[in-house]
Length: 329
Image 1 (cartoon, rainbow, N blue to C red):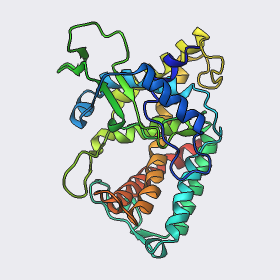
Image 2 (image 1 turned 90 degrees about the vertical axis):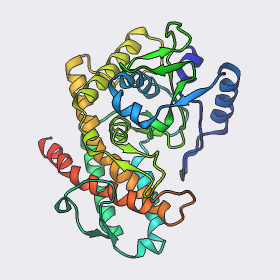
Image 3 (image 1 turned 135 degrees about the vertical axis):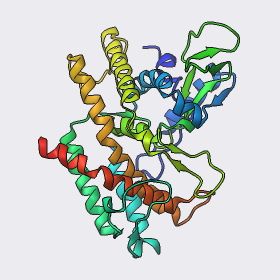
């Protein structure tokens, strides 16, 4: 297997996992940095939020196969899913702060969620109970555990400098040359770990509706209409599925996960769409725990407190879909 072809498009930035007892090894860091320095040159452009939103269908068809290739990597770290370990770790630390000693008032700042969809306040104990509920869902979901990026939003997707997004949504070379390589690159694996495939999918679709490129408080915007992108979601999942089948049939990866596809392409597509939808709730409670802790000692200009509450409100709005799924199993 060509390690440069498999890994370099993704591991431009690798960091030890945030607040984890299983950090990425020094060997992985050193090898990745060496390979990147040796084989990668040039410059990149970040994709603007407006470009990401308006051209999500085209971009998604490129990102999806890249995500699929990440999910087939065999990385020498713990293979246990980390989503709940991280969330519970952040919550445990938040409990020890002044903010964790009192109820968390939930109010929406940027999210547009009806007040009747979420409680007025919750305690840390109640938030722990919600994580237990999510754990039950994760078990019943049977989503494959894969190596995951866990933070695939537009700020972590770069466009090679020689390429641009055309008005029709296509990606073209500014030099006029044919696009012969992936024009996009995934970066910043700070939160990477083995995780449920559905989390990486659901988290990515949460990010369709969140804009972090804001200069005024709360320093982010939430576009609720972008959470329900039926056409983009299905096209993304279809491109993901097709790449998984291509890799499986090529035999290029001796460590290819056997549970990513079933042999029934329609069934696989339906499952991916379902996972990408249901796991949005998991993403929301995960990042709410992260933001609650960061709000106690913020080092950058960002309203973590409001962000935590917005993501909690979104979680509660979506919780019923998790319960409905579990009741059907």
